[in-house]
Length: 185
Image (cartoon, rainbow, N blue to C red; front, top):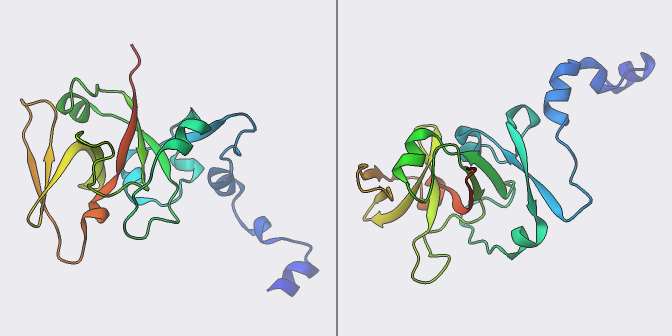
């Protein structure tokens, strides 16, 4: 195949649809200043895609590198290849169930390399993005036997109990720890 391409003076990229290449390759390179580009994606992408393709990027937020470097990770399972930080927009259900800590439309920064139930700060409860029904929801999480208890901050919303499948561990359900919430007023 290489010889045929060489004789025809073509590259592999010439065989692909240019629109498809642009969708996958037009993510801006890392910036040269003190900020990193963090991609805002749908919950389903944050929950299941190790690397973010440009066709899945809704927008780009900038965070100071010094802030991101200070965040500790606590990774379980095979997440080393995953892009560490992604952001999602809280939907109406997540926003109101975690009210007043979260509001609908808030930008939620998720550290996907922190997928353990260990408290980040002693005496404080972590907020997590949890893989649920092919998307992710934001809740406080506890373990009760072989069940994850998804607890909303707002007491008017129901607690959900998520039974752990036999072959999966806690880290397979935890997308990551919520490490920043941005609410525009």
